[in-house]
Length: 52
Image (tube, rainbow, N blue to C red; front, top):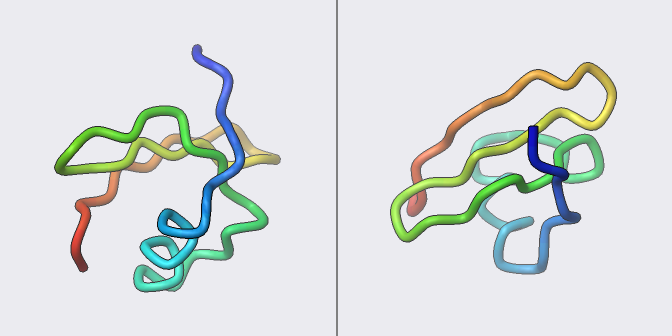
């Protein structure tokens, strides 16, 4: 499993659009169409589309 990074300002806005708390999620991968996120405490992965 890759290590996640803290989301930047643009990524935080995308997370808030999906009603996710940016303090609880780390960005594992940021492609042109989607994010792969890792929950900071539970380790669960979530994939969300960009441009919500």
